[in-house]
Length: 449
Ligand SMILES: Cc1cc2nc3c(=O)[nH]c(=O)nc-3n(C[C@H](O)[C@H](O)[C@H](O)COP(=O)(O)OP(=O)(O)OC[C@H]3O[C@@H](n4cnc5c(N)ncnc54)[C@H](O)[C@@H]3O)c2cc1C
Image 1 (tube, protein in one colour):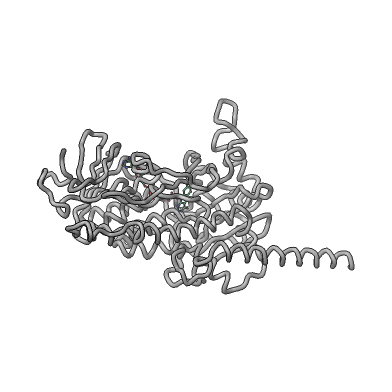
Image 2 (image 1 turned 180 degrees about the horizontal axis):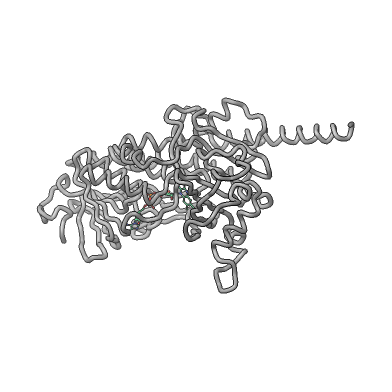
């Protein structure tokens, strides 16, 4: 058995061994940068070779605080990404806009829309410059949790076995420790499928120009007939955009099964796009920029986010749903919350000093994730659309909703964080009854005129 510090084979104290991070996505890169800057020995093991495509291209403003905290902000900013100031919503010809700069919580109100191949590469290069060792093309396929004085051990596909001071699983959809430690549990969200690809969007050259369209917003469109089918359009700075549709598997895959003579993924995506008037109008000159892909069953959860000598970060732990672009924010939040605890793990000399990962990491992290979960649930059960499409929203309430959608889901001062279920349900009920009153007034107006 090699230790992760080859030069100290077999005699390492806990503090001399490396922290090993599985995966070089945003969670892994942020953790690596933070620890390396604090002077710890860190090794990142990444199975692919960068740059590599990844989905998850629209960030939330809360991310900017994370990037600053781990020292990666200058590396990300050098990417010259498309600024993002909010989210636009469209449904059956109705348009709404949430401006993240006008929000209840303190903190940045703007962020970026990024191509992940470039973004992730910049972040991990930043971590490397701070001193983290990064190995690409290495897959972790075995794990043994820490026991007594033995640190956690990893087995790699190249035959190596490494002992670490601590292991951070940031393997995203690889879900390494969830599988190897049997931590997987039902994510309590309906399984859905996404079809997505990049396009040369052609929106800047449209004649007449697209009215009311702003590149600095993600556009979330709802299908005119199927309320549980929605689309994203995420414009980048270079005239390309990410385009996707999400819905129940039986609907999204009903237009083809990839067998001969059926619609391929490209055709299926465009068939869905053609059914939504706003996207149809905006993308009338668009051309594909890469192959359309599909991803299903991406919601995931685990029974716990920590164990002897290890913790799970980002998607390796829990992933909800793409609708509010919360994935990278949660990944970074989890990494930044774990870091002070990892430092205490490295410094501790007796059991009594160990951090309590359940109360100091998992519980507070999950509180914010559960706020997002409530918003995702409210999107699909119709409460949130009722609120978003209210024609005359209360300003303060709008700012509270805006803050959560900007990623400030841990700000307990916000009533839509501290009591998200109760608040969303009550507000949706009020919005629906106001809607009914307006409709019946409109009908009466018609009858009397
Ligand atoms: C359809 C869809 C749309 C989305 N849109 C958005 C969005 O707009 N905004 C947003 O914030 N989020 C979005 N997400 C979520 C986003 O993709 C993830 O939340 C985010 O990438 C998680 O980051 P991470 O660092 O946890 O993992 P990842 O970014 O997945 O990184 C994990 C890394 O681990 C590596 N790895 C895996 N297994 C192993 C192994 N065995 N050994 C070594 N390395 C391994 C992988 O190669 C990968 O590079 C979307 C998700 C889906 C499904």
